[in-house]
Length: 85
Length: 325
Image (cartoon, helix red, strand yellow):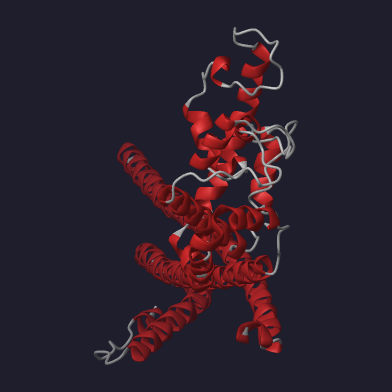
């Protein structure tokens, strides 16, 4: 009986160890996917920031050029005699 | 678990009718996705607390662990879907903005180019108006360059000659033609009583203006062929026969010169050649039909006056007239 009980305990321990390894494998998979998701979010943040910076630069350039054009047009409209000659 | 499934399910929108409705629906979907991402953290925290409490209190721990595994997998997949959707929409929105900015840059460049074109046109018009007001110095064509003048001087004279009045030149040209025709029609008449006239030798040299000298019979015959004393008409024949021997000119002032060609005379011809070409170039440039048509009445009157006096006073009056000019 004692021998049979020892075998049963060994089997139970083996099953528990196997389940524990399966759980560890599952957790490692989940953590790996979460890390991949985190990397994707970091990369997406960098890309989006870069795009936003370029867009901001273009908008600044456009704003300056528009201001220059406004000044030129205002100067031209302030001197209508330049177009009547 | 229940709240998460309820937030994921969204009502499917109806078919859009216009661009504004499409954009509004897209913006609503994007805002819902962002709201789900914000709620996802709360749901995950609440799910973790629930599974912890169940694992400690419930006897069937195996079932709780399996349920936790399923929930974590579904939550991860759902999070990846939400993040993919939101990132795609953000990326699409940024691309649209970049395209819009690029289109605006293109339109602005077009406006700048049009403005620059207008500015260049205004500058060119102003320059042309200012350039028309500049008057060059006026020289008459019959004033041939002196002997020591070089080709650059002739070209400079030609350049300065661009802006002068054309009436005198045309009159002079018409006068020369009239004199040619008049002398060609009438026989050669002696002009012994006529005061000073240049010899043909001197007339063949374009730079010589000497009006004094002895006149021989041969000179008079040559004068009948071409009465003009000015070298403009002679320059054509002078250039056509560049290698004329010295013996053909008996009235040369220096009779002691040898018959062999003088190198100095060759150099003189070389110097005189561009001067002739410069004067002829001016002559042909100013002799355009448009310029001739500008003063026909004055020239015709002058010709009529000359031809009417041809029979009565003949060449004497003509030469006196030429002397006056």
